[in-house]
Image (cartoon, rainbow, N blue to C red; front, side, top):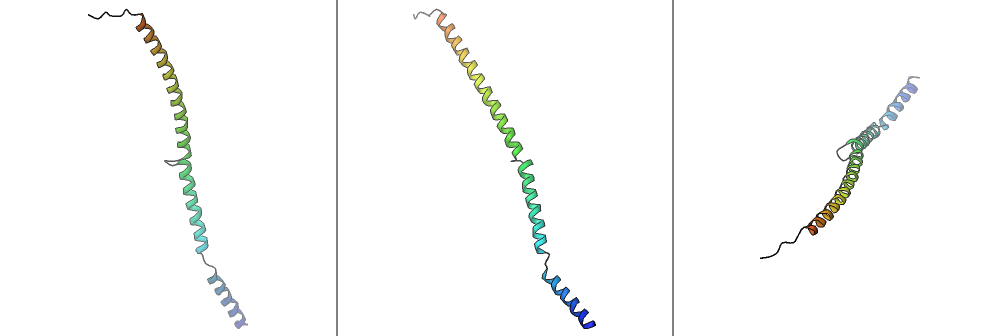
Length: 92
């Protein structure tokens, strides 16, 4: 009986040796790296949140540029109208 139990114990030891913890460590490291990457993508310096904020700022600035250009055109028109009403200076 002891010979059989010794064989069973020896088989279990060999089967545990074949099972390595390296794949588990690789899986854990992969999950950690993926979590860091996703976190950096969503909340980092070059994140989606920053990108969307910059797009919003760009749209706001483009609208402001359009309004200022329109106002500038109106002021130029008024300037040239006033300039044409002034008497022309005679040259000496």
